[in-house]
Every structure is written in C-alpha cells, then in structure tokens.
Amino acid sequence: MFNKWRAQASIVLLLLLSVFSLPAFTEESITDLGLPLSSLEISKHAITIFPDGSNLPEGQGSVLEGKALYQSKCMMCHGEKGIEGPAARLAGSDGWFSFSDPLRILRIDKNPVLLISVGGLWPHATTIFDYTRRAMPHFAPKSLADNEVYALTAYILYLNGLVHKDLILNKQNLVKVSMPGKERSVVAWPE
Image (cartoon, rainbow, N blue to C red):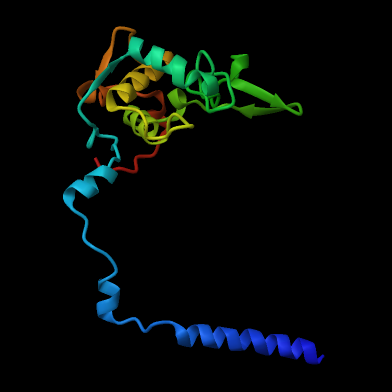
C-alpha cells in the first residue's frame, strides 16, 4: 500500500514542479514568437489552385507529353490505362451509377467494392492539377515542374475522354474542361 501511495505522490510532485518551472507567458512574449514572413516566403507555400482557376501558374503541356511522363513516373502505381495498379483509379467510370462494366467492380469475399475514379468523381479539372502538383509522384511529391503538371493533367483528362489528343493544356483552357462529377457535387466555393 505504501508503494502505491508513494508512486502517486511522486507523480503529483513531478506535475507541480513542471507547472511551476514553466516560464511565465506575457503578452509581449507571445507576440514575439517569430518573425513576419515576406511576400516571397508566403508565395512559395500559397500554391492552392481554386476551382475557378485562381492561382494557376503560367505554363502548358500536351497530352503526348503527359503520356510520356505518365509512363515514366505514374504507370508503376496507376497502371498502363489508369485503371490498374495499387493506387487510385484515374480513368473510367466511378462505378456509382452503373454496374454494366465488370472493371468498375472489384469483388472481395464475394462482396462488390465500388471503384471511384478521378475522372468520374472529381468535380473540377483544376483539382487534378492541384493534387498532382502537391502529391505526385508518390515517391517525390512537389518535384514536378508546372509544365509537367499541365501535361500530366492533360493526359489524365484524355484517359477519361474529356479532351482530344491534340490538346495543349494551359491556365486558360483548363478551367473550361467540364467534369462529369460536377453535376453530382455540392458547391462549397462561392460563385
């Protein structure tokens, strides 16, 4: 019994000592926690691309350039046609509304699992650009140049039958691409 009481008393004593040993925070010390960032420093991290195309960088990329990049940097995870591999589906139906295509449904223990694709579910083509630039390739996120991201976005849109193979994608025409998922989405951005 004595050891239990002694252990509890030791814990209380340590807590009290840690609280009283903390430096006192004043208004001055709280406001002096860092240095203001310059506009240049902020711009390096303010890379969000909005659905209306705000913040899209200059640059361009073609479907053919995107195909070559896809084969070297993306195919290992997404498969040759964007529907194979361990990573998310990039092309095809999202599987939510039709079950006629057997590639749309994966069966695990005799239970159907719906496969959701970027091309079928995402409501804005600008989101493909934003996500690709931030997170891809998985082994080296943020390593792609803006022209490479435009090219890969063009190729993903092409895999989904949303653009023609001769397209050169840029900030002006990316926002004009109509995504099938837009009709099923809820608008969270003010018009």
